[in-house]
Length: 229
Ligand SMILES: [Ca+2]
Ligand SMILES: [Ca+2]
Image (cartoon, rainbow, N blue to C red; front, top):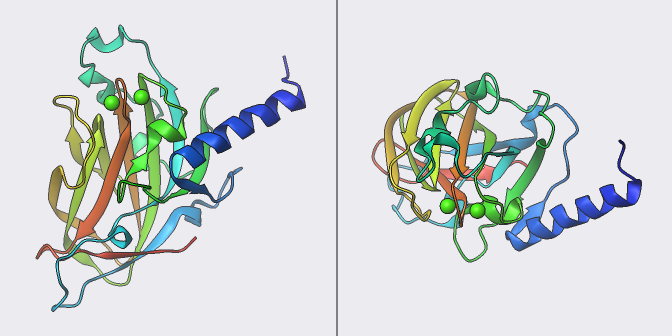
């Protein structure tokens, strides 16, 4: 049965409030392509650049697809690490914002601010504090030149899987953990001149649900991210 308009408005208001609680600024709901809405510029560091990290080094513009919920007893219960292996969307490593979401999920473009946690993409607040859930985050990073040995520095609460230009480059599926900056380092990532697609899958078992994502060059110097939105 079709929901009354007032119910839809209430749902939209609740989602908006959840977004505000997440310390993120809504940049508008997407209704379809183009996927370039979440495209940022990467600015490689100069040779003399200092290694200091600021909020401007984290990728904060993402197209989110979710939430995909599961049950407490799924995946063997307990820590439920196997949830990160589940393909909640077919062809998950190549999501680009054009795929039709299943019932209960939606594409939404968001610019997060991190709030009190520099660089945090707070999915738990964004999705209203739900448990046993997964979401995808897609971003396009525009490189002015080939970067053959970029390094990804990521953190997650709880599990995370990452694809770069369709290639699986990282999975964290050990103990549940609170998310922090730079928990995992992925070296030798090839970024090519022009747009590069990043797909993140992040799974929450309980409580906090978030991830962090920044890049450095091969020498560990932070790459600056210039939002296009
Ligand atoms: Ca949660
Ligand atoms: Ca958690």
